[in-house]
Length: 369
Image (cartoon, rainbow, N blue to C red; front, side):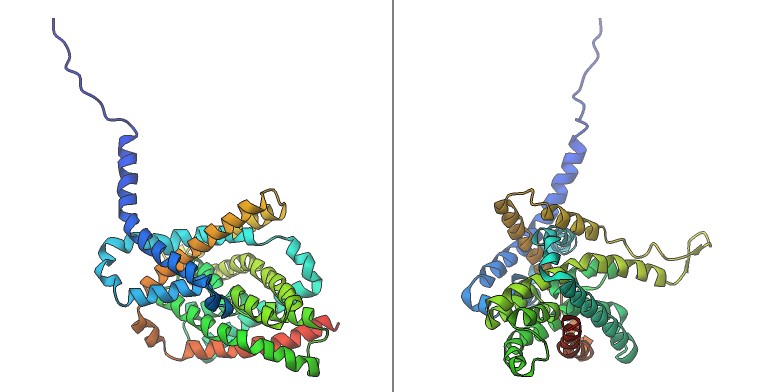
């Protein structure tokens, strides 16, 4: 009588689990590296000096990332590259979706139709001006122009990072756009309180601190910069400035959808491998994270989650976005930014002048109507 020799067959889950383990092992060094920089950036942003000067965790994260990326990072790049790339791509998209928990549709009601109209007109006019000046007059590449336009017209570094997946920008293009936001947004923090004092006499923007707060929120780049400028003016201005800024941030999702659709139509036809014509419309990826952003903002508007939970999610989101910015900084070389020259800064300066003067004119026209 013979017996069959048996052997243990591998589990059907063994191969997938091993693949996941290998993937995690490859990602871990870069994620830890980006996470450490993000932790430092968030910690510094909560100190009195950085908070008083309106330097957000996102701005600090990319600055720290660039400092390390251009000095020490080359020694660990071989082991960290996979995780760093994951952070600046996948974690970025997740961070943009979770950003919706900082907004509610009720914010729109707080500034009224006038506030929403001011935000929309300033956003649209600023981006159109960026496109015309950047591509036609300054002859900048389209991607850099779009990134600077998005950062100036919507919400600074967060808008730049959210636009990146739509235009598929290079790291140095993103860093150039973010740097322009830092320069002129920082200048705005100190300039707007002085402008408010002048407006008390000139009354270019009718009303008082609340109305000037709407102007502030509709024209300053970063949320942190809006908070800093608004608080320097007064509590009433700070409240309306933040609400106006949040409504402006909510326009990020429709902006990305419109931009994606427009770029898809603008792509030149190309020839596919089989010789047939390709209309090119599939070359621009649909920003699915923008839909997620809208859904999350809608969920937050229903107030189904406890405030403590929403606050915890906001902290997690800040950390994820800071990791993405840190990863971006690590892969950005100063030499590439230097090669970009003065044109990006000039474009951002022109947009800043428009936000100051044009934004004041639009605010006066809408509020005075």
